[in-house]
Image (tube, rainbow, N blue to C red; front, side, top):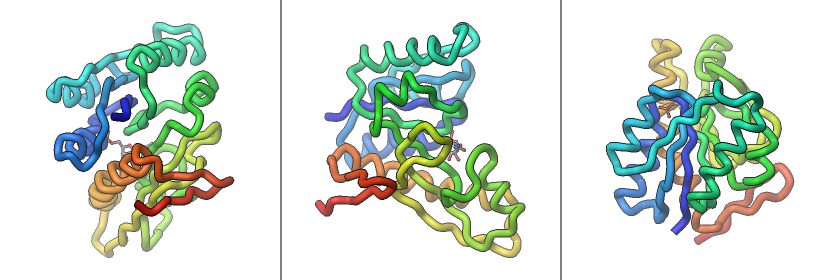
Length: 202
Ligand code: GAR
C-alpha cells in the first residue's frame, strides 16, 4: 500500500476526490497525512472528517523556504511517504522537497499545459478566448507547471460560459483525472522518458 501525503492550501475538493477514490476501493493507497500552509484551509477539516492526520505548517514561522520545506520533509519521512500530491497547494516547491522526492510529486493544474501556467489559469484561458480549456496532471519539477505530463482532459468553452462556470466544469474533470493519474503511479505504470510519460498497459 503506497503511503501518500497531500499538500493543500484551500477548499480541498481534489483532496476529497482522492479520499473518495480510496474509500470506494478504486485506489489501493492510503493518505497518511495532509499538510496545509494555510491554517484555516477547509481541506484540513475534510481530512480530519475521514480520520486522516491533518497538519498546518505555518510558513511564517520559518526564516527561509529551505527551513520550511525541511520541516515538511520531516513530516513526510515520519509517515514513510512514497508519493506527494499537490492539490491546490499554492506555493512553488524548492530544492529541498524536489530533490528528496524527485519524480514522486504530482500536481493538478486547471489548464491544458503548457498554456496558462500560474494563478487563475481558468480565467486566463477564458479571457484569452480559447474554445477548448481543460486540466493537466503532471510530475513536478523545478519549473512552475512544467514537468512531464501524465494526463490531460479537455473541456469545451460554451457561448454562455463565465470564467466561473468554466472553472466549475474544469474542476469536475480534475476530480476524474487526478485519481486516474494517482492510480497509474501507484500501480507503477508510468515511465518518464525525457518530456514524455509513457503509460504501461495493465
Ligand atoms: C484546483 O482547480 C487546482 O487545479 C488549482 O487550484 C484548485 C484547488 O481546488 N491548482 C492550481 O491552480 C495550481 N497551480 P481544490 O482546493 O478544491 O482542490
